[in-house]
Amino acid sequence: MGIRSWALIAWMGLTLAGCGSSPDAPPSPNDSTSQSLTGTGADSSASSGLTGNSTASAAPTLPPLNREAVPNPFLRYIGRNDVRSGLFNPLALATDRDHVLVADGDRQGPQGACGAVLEFDGLASDASAPLGFPYSDLTESPSVKRLSPHPKALAASSRYVFVSDDTGLYGYMRDSRFVLNFGRPLANPCDGLALAGTNLWVAQGGQVFPVPVQTLIPDPATVSFALAARSLTANASGSVYAATATGVVRVQASQITLSFGGQGTDGRGPGFEAPVAAAGDPRNGDVYVLDRHAVVRFDAYGRFLTRFGAGLVQEGASLAIGAQGEVFVADRGSRQVLQFEPGH
Image (cartoon, rainbow, N blue to C red; front, side, top):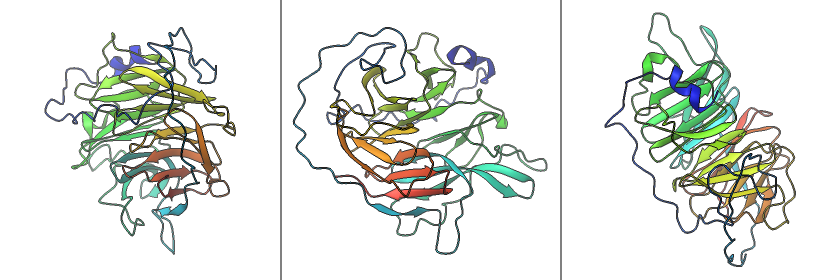
């Protein structure tokens, strides 16, 4: 599908003027790069999954790696107390500041199995219970339609929640839970979603491209990347992170500014088994990669720092980082959401 087919299914003429989210802060100096690529480019190490031509500028002199990273300690499970878990099959995560949103599948209700998005406070002393009601209904009674039991991707900001399941992309207003477009799909199903500034970044049909949130209609002239992304995330600085079958790509200001495989840019990494998701720490630009059974952490230049979560993560599905560096992992193996302490 991709960018050309998006507008065929998105609703036409409807704008959300006055409801758009505020732009995120520009990329910080801490979110700096080890290379600069323009347009649709290929990773110079052939590990990012990109296709096409690229133009790489000279790599800047990197600061010394003068910190000894230690694995992020496990903190707790989200949505679970001593008796039971309130999550059935968490498949996708997103964060807005210190809140983590969970797209949970295979939930059971009076009308059968469905999906829902639940919100938790990642800094609260007790994160076993969700905040407010879940995002689930797509129509009002008497004939209620809900998200399918198989959510695929999730993105959130202070104003919006977007979730894709196997039937399409849907949107909600964050505070009111009001469903956009009368509960009809905004677009075909997406592999990844990320909200960065005024754009919703989408991975769909082998392409990664931004869509203005106020219109949800892509500009055909906009930048897009031929990138088979498995997932997308964004941090508060506006950086977008894509995980491919072999590596990680970071996009800043519509340019690819970093890409690397499992050994990192310094060759010291442990390698990837099957990267599932990537996310950036908004505090310092560290890049976290969920590699199926563990999380691998790199610095903002792609240099290997540490690996953690092995033995706890059974079959990772999604990854998200909070504003204070909290690390959240959705694990389809244990059907839990794990929270790890911020890295140092």
